[in-house]
Image 1 (cartoon, one colour):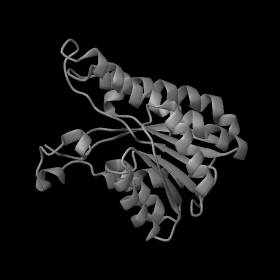
Image 2 (cartoon, rainbow, N blue to C red):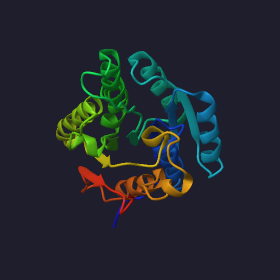
Image 3 (tube, rainbow, N blue to C red):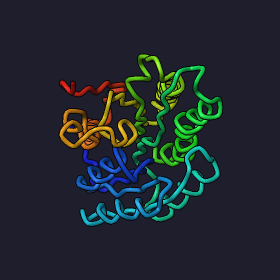
Length: 240
């Protein structure tokens, strides 16, 4: 028999849209109180209102996760308003396509600042809360590009490979604290990050949806604390 997650506290980054938004709402349906982090306050307020309508507490905090000070302030706000985190979903990230030589070095570096250091900043701020509780769950959303590099995605693939390594090493460090750390590695998901406005609604339905991943994460969180899936890969059945 699995574990109950109702009444727990989850912090979600990139919570204003896409996978993050769907994850917040799916957790709220399960009775999980949610802390939302993203850069745009108006979008966060909209998602938080929907979460609260499902009967849970919701708190927001704006931050650029590439900035350690902003992250620390945001986490302090969520802890004050909701309490210490039981669950952390590191979802926020950016994508960058372009050949190795065509990509501006500043853009290449910025991909790492958000995808790798952003994940590090948030985790570093939240982890002491979980260690004090002697339990917790950390889900880092990586990508199939973090398992296999593809032409035109050197910076993105490199950043997601780095997230894989960081996650696995951290998982080994905190297992004795009853903290589960694992990655999701979706292929193409029908989000603005992946496609922008290039697909019509009918075509989008062929790809994985943000709510698909949100449901999958909830299912993993409900697993008995003695077990976890440290790494998983998600694909759409037949999108092409």
